[in-house]
Amino acid sequence: MTVDYARTREAADPHCLGDGEAAAHLRGHPWRRFVVLGDSIAEGVSDPVEGYHTSPFADRVAAELAGVQPDLAYLNLGERNLRAGEVRAGQVRPALAFEPDLALVVCGANDALRPGYESRVDAVDTDIAAIVSAMQGSGALVVTVSVFVMGDYPRLPSWLGPAFSRRMTMLAARTRAIATAHGTVHVHLADHPAADATLTCDDGLHGNGRGQAIAAAEMVRRLGAYLREPAAASLTTAPH
Image 1 (cartoon, rainbow, N blue to C red):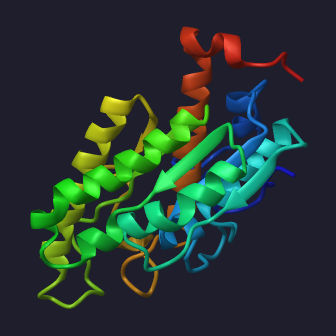
Image 2: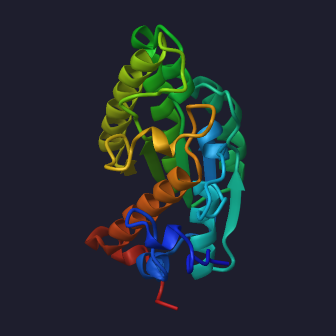
Image 3: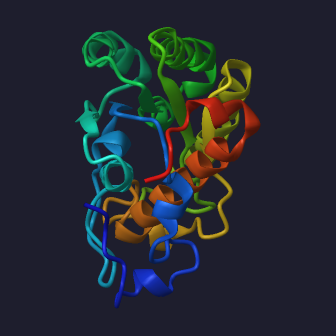
């Protein structure tokens, strides 16, 4: 069932989906099996925000996809605290067993959170690229995400906040480079105009309800743009 956005603060937020917008973007989409791989961002760790629906962004996207194709099967393997290598080691096999035709890959932030990320970036890139390649090898369209990067993380310790922002900026750029190299549908949130500390949870890290809503909107819009590309025309089913 699609999310009812009417009569909420979310409905008036220009960065979020408007009533009927998702259905228009996703009309006739071909996907029947949607899998999510990643860390706590993929899992959907969040805090509620008054006037915004509480579903995390991957669940929101799944709901909108199912609104167009009611037989959609959805599996979210996201698990908090995992680094990219752990996502690769523990989630690729069950994701492939699910036989997805659409896969969302969101990881790397736990690597960037830890000091020394700069010396490990190549290994992290290798793990993310391997996850993407495995999903593409199974025939799935892969969506990658460069998550919101805040200029300031005021809830984090002063010694960590600025360094974390620099490392998250690096992760965002490198994830986008992987996306370009592998031809994924990429959702680049790192420099989104709404990206500031008001989008974070009380933990100072994860996206709150508004952040989840904006991320979902951007992914739906990117999928819609993909479906309108000539190369994707042969993939779409007849409009419902």
